[in-house]
Length: 452
Image (cartoon, rainbow, N blue to C red):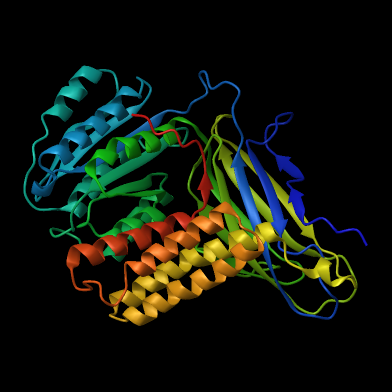
């Protein structure tokens, strides 16, 4: 018996006739064959790839961006100088069709550059250069003011973004992460996405991650201030190459149940038949890949070839005046008797599933450590290390080997004889775990040139 196929590409698209869709959709199942009359749990890798654009001349959509920068006392000196350099970089890569604003905050909030078209770059640069350090950290005040500025010109047909940078704890104004995340979600629903950069050891990573996930933007953690311009360059390059906006993925199973997508907030559409699981994703830019890991439960099935998963991706195509586009694929799977080797899971899918599980486990480890359960936190990481070591023995994949080494390092740095109550030490470990979890759950791939 020949091995059945377990990989599928999108089969249909609606939008502007005669043009290919800007996003390629590929689905790969963990199994190519399952035995009859036996319940099964399957995994599906859903890969979205924004295709390269032959020429972007006059095709880029306008940018409406607001920078919200921390100028509290802890930012004085080199950190603030790197922030100014990053802000100047953003301005240098904008044109007269774009909108820019700059808000700074310490215990007070000040709009240095009100929202306006980028027609006088020299003036904007001079205003950026005049920023001076101040006092405490009114993050919420700065964020809300920055949103107000960008919202003055937020509309469809352009990329609307707030980029927040801080190195400290929000200690003035609203400090509840859930309230600020709710505000970020409200902004995203109005078309304004939220990205954030956390610098050093003292900021609240839970707050920034919650805001970025709710606001459908990007979260960055930088240990040292000299990395700030690189991060801003990466964010700006993405904005300049946006291909798809308002990306919505819908998953259904006619035969079984879509249990969920690992590491993503998702909603179940009530009353739909079959039940639909829906995800709203950040904007996608040229050459970016985004991988979703979906779990599917199938009840015992007779000999057949049922459709086990339907994936639909709806988005606004930024290169076609934001035309609405829909692409989809229906995935079938044979249920039949066969050799045992044909029932074995696909190694590529298994790898991604295990790495994604590891990312989620790091968040669980952080929760245990936060509660003082040091042994439980280490046990969670150790279980993941053991699983990945077994996988590496079967297939010495470089990504698996790299994660094994990373987990070994994390465990060695959390040995019982380490200074567990040293604040700076535990803060750094916590931020690393949370950032690794964020990146691992939101698997992306894109151009990594970070020149600024």
